[in-house]
Image (tube, rainbow, N blue to C red):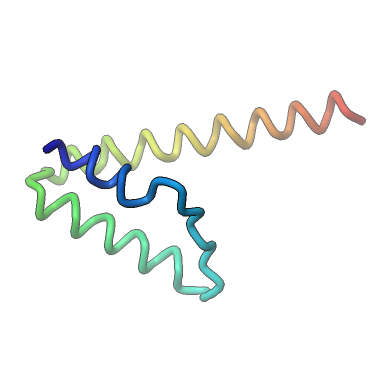
Length: 72
């Protein structure tokens, strides 16, 4: 079974709870890093994944900013 399908089925129907701890982002990042490394991702591939994540967040922030401008 594809690991991505396993993760999707485990979280299906469950809304993730936002972290309230200030260190939540750090813990999540470290866990994500360890998971990717243990699955064979190289440091260069981790940089590529990180770059993609930053790009996705940047696009979302840009879209939100444009939505706010048009609503004003």
